[in-house]
Length: 165
Image 1 (cartoon, rainbow, N blue to C red):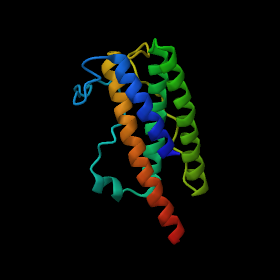
Image 2: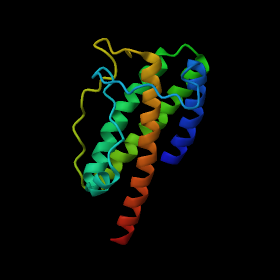
Image 3: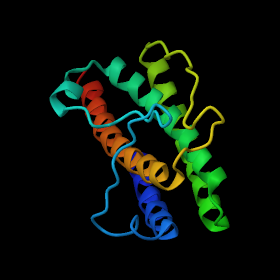
């Protein structure tokens, strides 16, 4: 499922960056990551050896939390997008993310792990809106891309470990 979502996200990201226009659609452009708590996206930028050192339960719980936050962020991005085609694509993508969250929850339950408690998900300011929508949208999609890549690796590693037992 993560591979399909990665493919779908690439299409959406290309369309979204074109929608934003310059400088966001320029190949090497990378705005500074927001420092504020207004955009509290979980970063997938953990050192690989630290991430691999986590137990399966901890990695799955972090995936669950990250996708919960990212799902809310993509929904807000869709809500704030004026292009109907892009909005529809983002909302369709949300359905896939919701399915991924369900799969992670199901896997955690099957393995006997307690599901992490639901947390209050906030992606915008006090009113729930993105503070700098163009920059925030760029970072939402970039973090999502990183999490999907990492999750695909995690799920393959987990599958191999479970087959060995």
